[in-house]
Image (tube, rainbow, N blue to C red; front, side):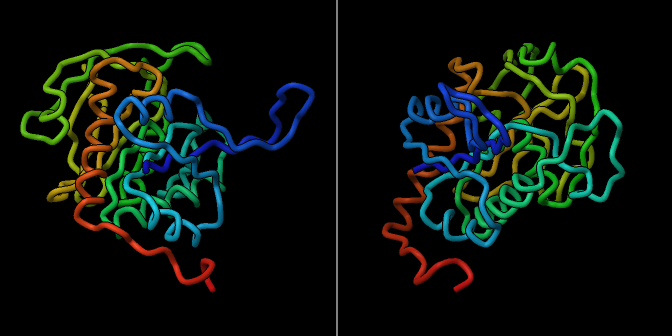
Length: 244
């Protein structure tokens, strides 16, 4: 069972309805399914609920989305940084903390990779050129994994990825290593060495590409999740509601 964090949008129209909506591009749950997992969606909630949610999961995906608020890493806002999404920032940071505490395998996608870096004390470049096309259009570029990393063991590369972002990792978070780079030197993947587990962030969008290397990234997560579930079967749920 793989939890995937979601967007939270104030006003979305479908059919005759318009309302606040928690949503996720279908590529995420389809990619989880192709990799042998069962996806469950995790819409933004109060941060204490993250511990209870992660306790029921075998793996966690932090999805792509809006820019991380620079206040999360103590930086002034660049004029090119997008509007903040405080509900997602709080919720996903709490999910990451809970997953790291419980050693639940974790995959961060684009924003998810950036938030993993911030959660571990790192910082971000608030604007880089050349990694995003027009609004709503993905671009492709080459990625080269770093030899000896967990990512390189799964994807020796180089290979082309589907991307759309204007922010990127600056200072690495505590314990993280850069495990792939773009030709311009942008960090394209990070990982936290965890014996027998997986903590990985990728700057590209495997759910939008769907090629063999994209499935391989998700299979690395579902494989680690399956192994972890086998080591710890029947993890009990909480005795009561969060905070109770």
